[in-house]
Image 1 (cartoon, helix red, strand yellow):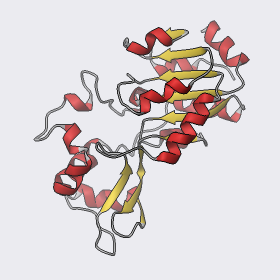
Image 2 (cartoon, helix red, strand yellow):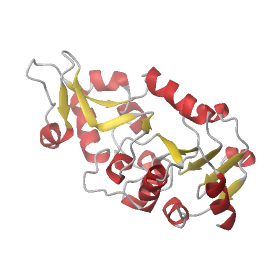
Image 3 (tube, rainbow, N blue to C red):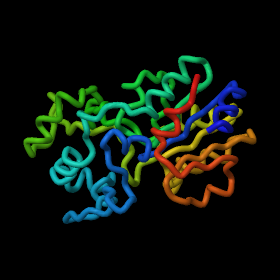
Image 4 (spheres, rainbow, N blue to C red):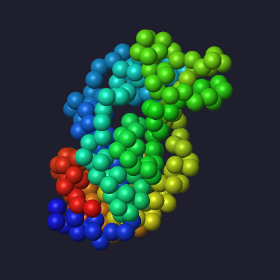
Length: 239
């Protein structure tokens, strides 16, 4: 921890790159661990359900799964989210680049959050583009019905499904943030999901801190490695 604290103290431009493991301490399951979302049983594989084609061909089944397994309104920011927001307020952290769609970084107070895979809190009509809040359409989904706009169009969550490209503006902002960082902290991600994981190649600095409970191929690139809860590690940092 002394080494990590020194890195933070000396840094002027920190970027955090995180995945599902950041939110597990908030009660949101990850995807690929033993108890993760992708190791549960459904009529269709989760990867198929969460695809663009499935959304339009099996819309009712998509929303049943989505409402049951992807929405966690009772979740609250944990020590990792709160510390990142504190580092931003202190002028140390310039951006959070996240693969998560839960909105917990914003709930903790972070302002510059780059959501690579979108957010469950934004929903738009696939026909007219009108915005719909999650709280407005969640009861409809939980009732087993397809949420529809006043124009009759299906309301689609603003999350990146399989077969869909990432938002170009978010990618560009993430690349610029990572390229300008002098310290990057990577936490709670196996870095198996591309193109998001490939963004780290734009980092030009020399200090990479990796916080992940299991070994990943990116370990060889890291300056410091922690095999512990990201909430516990980040929670100990002093601003």
